[in-house]
Length: 357
Image 1 (cartoon, rainbow, N blue to C red):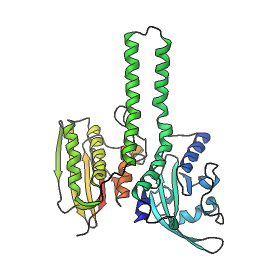
Image 2: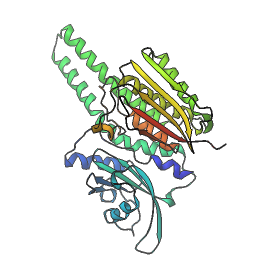
Image 3: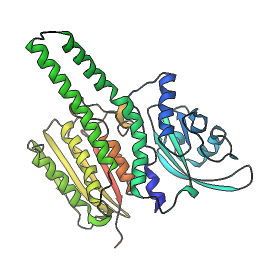
């Protein structure tokens, strides 16, 4: 169904933790230009920071006879759920009347951001069966591109600086030359990593949706880790469930587990205990991946799924693995959650709709 394809509608965040007003407005302009749908930006306090119909980057959003987005913000908050609804990632339905009396049915998609939240409003009339997964995936990719514009600035600035230093020194020492080449290699690798992950995310591929045992995807992901020698110092505890079957893209699902497993091994610095347990729970299949690492502090738990947010060094991560994994899970009708820690380490739970018998 086309509605399912738009669950991915707004995965966007910047690599910066704080913006001055100019930078924030500039980022909003990029986000508005990347999507055809009306959008509202909320602060953590619930104030409207921006609306796409106020943007010069967007020629027209929504209906000319409709109320401005800011005036509709109160209605949309009323349709959201949660203790703090404008900060609770979710999708919801909205039914409202235009000034003319016509009834409009909309889908609301809310995602957390570093400044608060972003709400995308999709008119049901714009959802039709001709929209395919490639279009939806590229739409979500547009949100990430806005973050990429900021994220690649740091490595490019570093590259520019070291090149200027090397060019200014007519006879650079071997030590300076080696340091410069190491710097260039590191920053080029980071840019290539970001590019590769985004291209993988954008490419739907030719594989059709099919029924498969979710443990097949887990096994394939574990094989990649073994092949790269990442499990040599890890004690693996695993339980499988033959009845845990889903319908979807096994390659994309494998990407979810690969990202989570690599993160777990890196958190343990290559040594520790890795728990991977599969089970079916009602209408869903659950795969829990736990590690014996240091865990995730309360201060960063709410930000770990933001694109380009990472606690790793540039050599280990780009900060988009979890964001991509969550979007793939949402596209499959599921979710990823960081569970409350019962002890040391972290436990992630992937939930996907169980295939009907």
